[in-house]
Structure formats: C-alpha cells, structure tokens
Image (cartoon, rainbow, N blue to C red; front, side, top):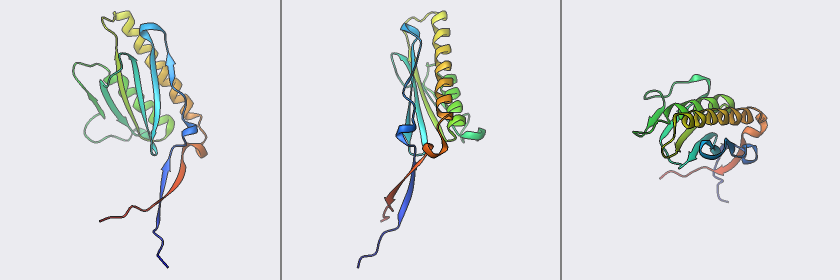
Length: 153
C-alpha cells in the first residue's frame, strides 16, 4: 500500500466573513474600499475617481515594525501614502492580521475642498471597514483547509 503524504494545514479567512465593499461620499469625492483575503492576511484597496496604485503600505497588528522603513511605498508624484499607511494600520489592528493597503484616488483638477472631502471620506470608509472586521467572530476569521503537503525537488 502507498504511503500517505502528510497534510499541511492552510489557514485562510472565511470568504463569508469579509465585509462588502464600503462606499463613502458622492460624485467626485466618492471613495470605495474593498477587502480581499490573501490566505490569513488581508489586502485592501482604497480607490476613487480614476483608480490606480499610487501608494502601498503594509502593517502588522500590535504595532509590529515592518522591516525596511515605515512600511509604505509611494510612486511619485502621488500623495496617497498617508491614506495607505493609515488604512493598513487600522485594518491590521481590527482584524488581528497583516494588512496590505493599496491606495489610488485621482480626480482631474480637484480643488482643495474636494481633496479634503475625499480624504475625509477615505478615513470614514477605513473606520467603517475596520469596525466591520472587528465584529467578525474569531471562529469566522479563519477557517482551515487541509491541503497535501507540497513536495520538494
């Protein structure tokens, strides 16, 4: 009889536990936050207007420092770094896992008042998303899949 391969436990977010996209604001100041599971961790996109990847931030729960700086990369001349960083930190704390946040919000010729409204809407969306993740019962945060142990060459 053949020998059974050991199985590796894969821990993933239960897709049913993840909140629906969060939309805040109207018109040119509207933003949308979407969350996706990446195994046991989360990926959040913060977009509005012409969506793009202007900044990426990573954060771990408990204020764990990320190697290589403040955990944020910004593509010049984009200015979404503070929003990406804030989102990653809020979600990591609320969800208890690592979070990568990608932010890209663009409106042609946005006025200072529109920019302030966009930032306020993004922050309100982050708080809403973090609160929804914080309410997920521990038993639903992760589920287990039993997968065959990968073979190594």
